[in-house]
Length: 355
Image 1 (tube, rainbow, N blue to C red):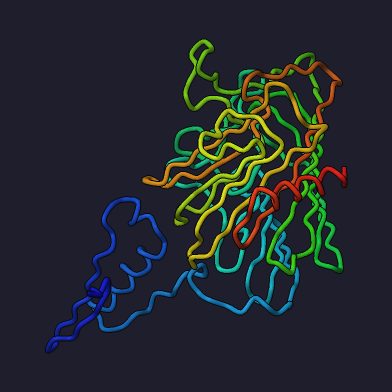
Image 2: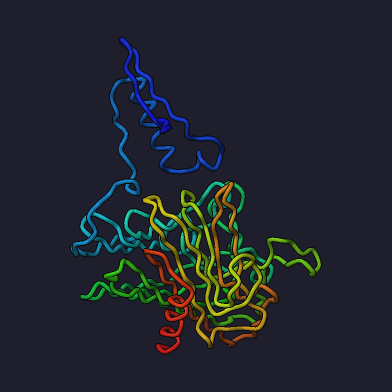
């Protein structure tokens, strides 16, 4: 028969809050469990609940269109009423520009600085090694890397249809060292979709500023000092740790062992906090394909770690000479609802036509 998973009971002057949830670390990382435990404990102790419910767990009517912009000295945000749709962050302690949060309904897709990898910041781009200097991880106890990703200029162009264009100029250099690589980045965010989708087009242009620029990554298995987790660097998404039932759909038809494989696009999907299907597709523009690139993915549900990236350097590093340029182009599309291979392939074909 049905058994109560959660209940409360008042007994005389006492109060009982009881839950059978929270079997393991995986369950305890869930924001729903944490909120329930904190509020239930407060009620049992005091008879009142003062702690607010996180935005991710509050239902709201997102059918209306009450869009507006919010701008600060470190962020650009698209709002629907009081609800954030997406937020782009820069000039923060994290050292790199990034999107967070990105909402599909009540579901915030991204997480920032999880305890396992503080340098994972939502949806972001970072190289790993440039001329042997680490631009990816933070130095112990700080939010700063050995290599500095310095933002020189940020321009935000909001449109009447609530699309936007974000332009950045950046320079890469060791701490207190000479600049070695310049970047011009343009991100075009499409108007909010009637189907709840969010589409973002990235265009990166890098230029070597010194005689040679070695752009590298942790070596992979089969190389000297190779690691099973080697190969990552570039455009990345780190997903909300509270999501469940992770899955992949790939352009090459294999949906299980996708790490280290090559293909035009990859989709990672989940059950969101409201039980609905959500997910994200990254597409690689044909002119940005490279022999030696491959998809890098992590999908560990027991200790939730959801991540994927079109790792440009996966199988081999890149050497640029002074004045030489590199251009990368991607589209990221975030979807509400269940997606099929044919629907995702159609999305990629439309992207190709626009190039």
